[in-house]
Image (cartoon, rainbow, N blue to C red; front, side):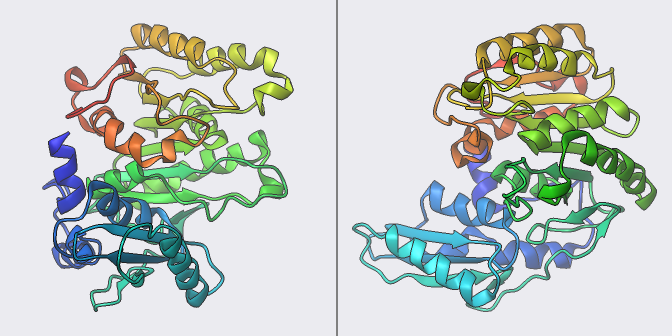
Length: 360
């Protein structure tokens, strides 16, 4: 755990992605925990700025209050219509969190520019149907370890998830050399089998652009879809990270959930050898009819596959369908995810894990 916390506070980037040192140094300066001031901020405050905030989409802002005793309050907001609206929302959230903190909330950063001067360019552009995550560091195909394509969940045709932030562990993968691209879908064009061809069809473009390794990840429908895409193109996908994968709606409503476990079994069985797989399951997930049985299915599949296959089933907290976006999930389990996608086969985690991962 100490090694992970050191990574959070110092944002140490590995030697595996040394290119563009000036750009990386400038980026790290913007998002350094040192920007939060002295004395050293709490783990939650530091990780909220250095990890969670970076998963937002513009317009984004982070507001902070710190008093003489070192106590902190903060708030952040993203996806606002204007920079002013983002700053107002961040300040309001910071003020609601003040409690006993005797200090005024001030804007620390707006997008990737700090109020005290350091700035980094937003990651622009994209490849095929994917766009670069704007506040994460874009190294480019030659310098990056590889590319991670992240897919959001589905909330129905009346909810647009294209501004939903990526989880904190995605920011840690970015720190470790992975460029991050978002697979954002219009809610009116996001039926499971309607958007899947766009995901699968975009993978060759990533390889053609020069990315040597490709990871797929996602939450809820995005995670389920990532496993399906890896099953179709195992030659192009090195690993999949799926948090709370789902495709059947809320289990209390009983809409086709009689087949949910069987469909999940077939989803796992359809993944060929080759891609590594990590699936995170959570207690209290309204879209998971039986986390224990799904964990057992994953554990059994891990024994059958040569490729490292990992089931993370945290002892709550975190819990719920959005458990993968909970900062506590990253602090406790990111070590396993990093090892799953980067370690040699003998060192990669496998099977079922409930306890925190520590060093992986």
